Length: 430
Ligand SMILES: Cc1ncc(COP(=O)(O)O)c(C=O)c1O
Image 1 (cartoon, rainbow, N blue to C red):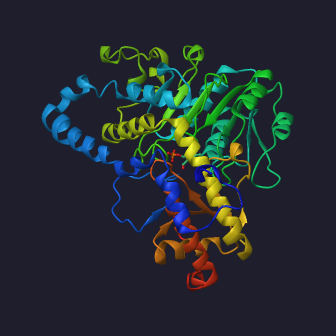
Image 2 (image 1 turned 135 degrees about the vertical axis):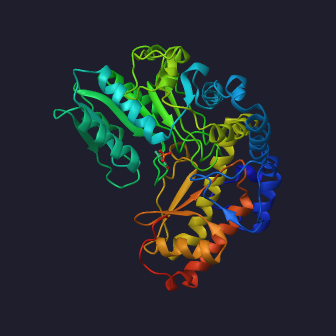
């Protein structure tokens, strides 16, 4: 039997088996594309900040030494000016969108704001925004702020999850009504990794006459997405997680082609202005997605996004998803055999079709276990309140041996109670 397909609870739990799975991995060569400074470090936080691709380091040298250093301001006419659309066009291929429907600009948070305000203005007779409590905090704050800014009649309805892992389609359906202007959700929930049925929920929003906004931060680069097929109106996503664009890399936004001329950014900047170098003093929005740009692109960070996206396109998003599913299944089988008996819970869905590329494990001492793993075990996961140890699988570079060894180190921290020496207070960054 091909061990790549034997992801059942009877899976052997030896390191040899993990190595055999790595030998059979058709994407194994992509790990060499990344800077791996410490081979003993197990990095399971690519769902927060992806590793540095070697090509990115080379590309940034080129941008700094040649383009900025020698070409100076001429760089704007030699590829910088068109970079937001060009790189957006490549991301479009990962998310099932047209090349002219995605642009790279600003942060995810700022893009959420722009699209929410645009959506409210496009549904002037409606007063409600629907989201749920699995949404990312920044999105929640932005929705609260947008509703406040829109006026006293506006309100945000937050659908509650019963178990903290998922929100049922029925609960969402009950909240979406004829007064709903916008439904805004994060496609892969940042704690549990729960993945929504994009097409079904988008259709639900449309039946009520509402627009649909998806936050794709934890989905893009981790799984194939089909925005056009699902008739998604609006989307945002970041580039520093599975796209490996680097800390603070600019985000992307998507607006479906037929909506582009009817939506307006609330931030009127000169990069969104029609024929901006005419330097006219009255604002006139540019065509297509250009109007959702605001100011000068952060060119160095923007340039760092492209090589990571190219790597994903080369590996193929379907193959990456297939490996990610095998790896999260493998991790869950190890959890079941080795960690569940120690009281560690699975805080992610069991069904791989409803799970993203990270697995959350729960333990009352999760915060201190996370700390001990980082400080003593050379293992980097991350921690999300109240008890989630998040283990992110980035199939471009995570190995099966990494996963095997990670579970062994977690087990050691728990069995030997190595976490007990750390304070219970939360540090500023987790
Ligand atoms: C799902 C989700 N949405 C939004 C954000 C905020 O992104 P940014 O800080 O780039 O605005 C994050 C950040 O991790 C996220 O995970």
